[in-house]
Each structure stands twice: as C-alpha cells, then as structure tokens.
Image (tube, rainbow, N blue to C red; front, side, top):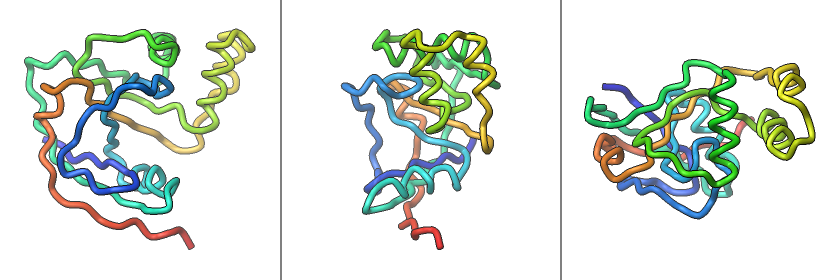
Length: 154
C-alpha cells in the first residue's frame, strides 16, 4: 500500500482517465505523485488549488511500467507518448519531465537538439515523481482518503 497525491483545481474523489491531451509524459491518464509538495506545486498553477489524497493497492494482474530513473528508454517512451502513440500499460511510474525538462524533451522530439544535447541539459532542480493510471482497472486501485485546500506560497 502507498499514499499518492493529485494536485489540481478541484478535489477528485472519483478519479477518471482523461483523453485528448497527448502532451503529458506518459500519455492521457490520471496523474499522481508520492511527493505531497510536488502535488501542491501542481495545484498552485490554478486559481483554485486542491490536493486529493489516495491510498493505492496495486495488484499483480495489472501491467505496470516503472522507470526508476531517467534513461534512454524513459526518454523514448515520453517522446512516443507526446507524439500520440498509445501504450497498453495500466500504470506507468517514473521521473517527471518538469517545466524545464519538458522544453528539452519537446526540442528533442522536434529534432531541434540531439539526444546527447538533451542529456547534457537534463538536470532536475529537485527530485520528481509521477504515477499515472491509464485504465479503468488501474483506477480501481485508488481509494480516496481526503482532500485539502493548498495555500499560496509566502
């Protein structure tokens, strides 16, 4: 069992996958993190700011892809997802391409920088984490615990 956090503009007691936006690292899905502070940063992008908290009970029947760190496979997977190529995983977990890294990934995907240049530029300011739920089966592993309002940083 693990606890995950979802930051957004509303409390989400019943998560759902959303399709249509292919610019997310692991494709359309419901995104969470094990880092509460990161979920709060996600929420602060909106005028209304909430963090929803869930307990997760993973099971062995789910197809889960885990990236322990940034790697060539991670980069290629993100580029494929951002280009709209679907995958069959129920859940994908790994580092997040933060706002800075996002631009480098996009530049690599667009052929504006080389793979070598990407890795030279790709340095995280702080550890990042994301876990995305892509199927109805994956969403059944989430149990809503509670939500809270996020205060603006001082």
